[in-house]
Length: 431
Image 1 (cartoon, rainbow, N blue to C red):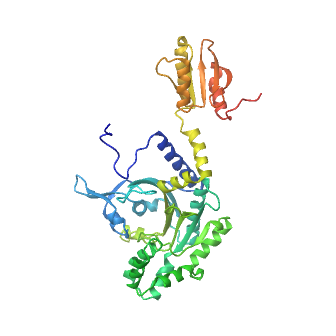
Image 2: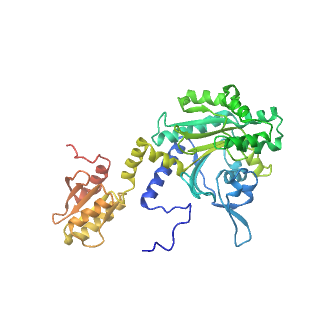
């Protein structure tokens, strides 16, 4: 049999109810951590002027744009990342807010690149930024939030590491080795791929700067090359009890040209996949975007939904935590009203309405199936309870579907009864 005529485009996803539930788990965890740490939410458009991304993106990004001309003749792009949009909105509105700004967005992004594990052409990112604070305390606060996010997903010490570097250390290295300022972005692009590049290709590229892989790796391996900012961040995170998650790694430089100082990436401890999250300081981007009208130091990071989900699902304890959340939050309803006596359907419909009006998720059969079929529907939709309306109404029966335990109640107190019951474990209530 032939397959469906139309399917999702390569690198794009359909979100079935379960996929939406998993996405909601990520979103609610991200949002909860950010708010707990004092960040406020903002939102920017998915479609932007292409010039916003060409102004100072660098690296591969400009070749990965979903770029087209709209019906008004404008050169526009589906955003490949959120930081440039943030810089634009902050340059325009920063006078309206006290500093520092602690903002976050959960937004959809698009990049035309080869779909593979941990990477698609459309994805969602959790972006967190601190703007208006130039000191390393802001970088430490941001890294702490990244760690808090991983812990909130159920990861523990030994599951992941935050690898921290500082572009300034490389800029000083470049200057000491006679690399011209205008060539530094190209040089950093080589360093960014040092772990993935074939040895002979790496040697050839570094030779153009009169360097060898050995000289570069010696620099990376020497902890004495840690910047003053890194040492301050380490001290700060040590005070928070997070020092064990931190690792100095000067091979981290990040691919985008707008980074100016401390940069970091979060990796699973086994390094079995690409970075889970990454970011750093970008003190000149807002000035560049605003043509010098606004100059505001900034630092931020992003976490994409693809990689973090893969890591959650491949780590036993985090996968179990997510499944528990899904069981409680992905059900179509909490209470399924079973009509055991059709002469009481009017009363049952009123009860369904009263439950919903009280904020209790409730559903029922739209037809008149047998009682056994209604119980099957209750289980299939993931309901915790089946509330039975029968000939004995206004007396009611409540069946706990997970345990088959049955309780009795009355229609007059059904709202309070079920509200309280939903807060209890799925076992028998003790007198």
